[in-house]
Amino acid sequence: MEQLLQMLKTDLGIMSTSAYDLRLRQYLTAAEAEIKREGATTINPRADQADAQLVVMYAAWLWRRRDSMDAMPRMLRWTLNNRIMQEKAATAND
Image (cartoon, rainbow, N blue to C red; front, side, top):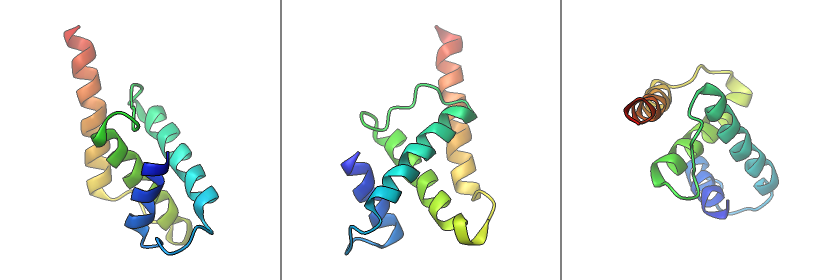
């Protein structure tokens, strides 16, 4: 979780403080839960770097949209859809 937290803080540009760490950890947990709810049920951000990046991107979007309520960025939707399709294809081939 600490590596994910550091990645998220870097993305958000708030490396100089730990004031938001608890809240950011909650965003990371929420992001992972939302990604699983979307359909990527085998996501493992602690073991897979691509999954870690997806969770961080999702958490960063959650953080940023709290003020703006912006829709999910295309890049994030594309990455999430690809991750879900990758899992479904692997399951279909088993």
